[in-house]
Length: 242
Ligand SMILES: Nc1ncnc2c1ncn2[C@@H]1O[C@H](COP(=O)(O)OP(=O)(O)OP(=O)(O)O)[C@@H](O)[C@H]1O
Ligand SMILES: [Mg+2]
Image 1 (tube, rainbow, N blue to C red):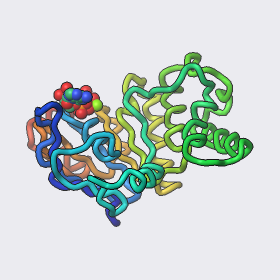
Image 2: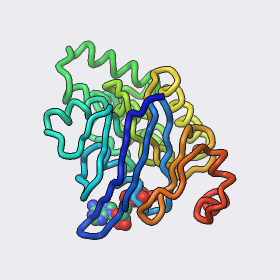
Image 3: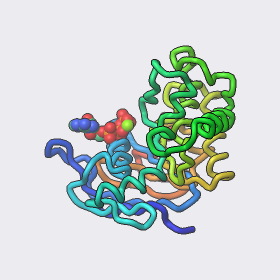
């Protein structure tokens, strides 16, 4: 399998405070790559660097084989159009209907006809099994439904890479399983590459093709779930016990 994201020796800081201290990752095309680590260790920070929201102190980040650190904005926009992002906070607009929320990226990045936009919106809603929610307000939805709508919006432009920051945070085990099934469907049927941050052990077991574990600014483990479960590294053992 070929690499779709390659991060090398990434060093990042917030106001002079080092967060990631030489992080390297290699994500294979068509896989689900899971980032683990304690709260505040820099998981979201890593995602934000890969999608260019933050600029590193040093290091290299290649997406689709192209170096994005220092890339000209216009060129980077093209890369971003192939990336979907499910943010940790979800971030649906309550002033817009579910359908209109999903239409946002289509209106922003394409000049598709209204009819086509509506068709894409319905297709994505169908994929997350929320056909009936088209005209509802996000405020009328449960937490799990909101996550599914946010997921439908994140994949509106059929991205090749989907970033999911805690897709199951605050959800019950049944809803978590539904979200996991959706992610695996995207990987298996659409060959999407998915980078997910999660701390739900059952979820990691189900979806992860590869795991990295961040601690103290560094990658302390890379490998499969089975290998992680058998690891002797104390921080990883603790993750599986808690
Ligand atoms: N905008 C910011 N300005 C300054 N410091 C920040 C900012 N965002 C995050 N940090 C700090 O960087 C560190 C890493 O934060 P990050 O959000 O990447 O952690 P995380 O691993 O995603 O944690 P969580 O599991 O709680 O979501 C934390 O110490 C945090 O306080
Ligand atoms: Mg985070």
